[in-house]
Length: 91
Ligand SMILES: [Zn+2]
Image (cartoon, rainbow, N blue to C red):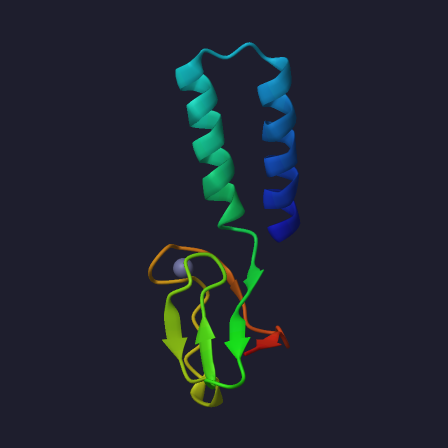
């Protein structure tokens, strides 16, 4: 699924350069790419100092990661698919 979305994104990006879409058509393709990008999981930001997690896309805070048994698959704010396996720790 994730690889499929990645492949679709790359294919659509190539398509923009090849097919002479009208501007509205090009905008539609760009929106489709944006939507697909939300299907590719991004690593949740984990801020060690604050003991908090946040969406990698819109930056909204999810809460303390010590209590992250409520890991949701998608950001409730922007719809970004989330990867909770990240070991990323900042600030
Ligand atoms: Zn978000």
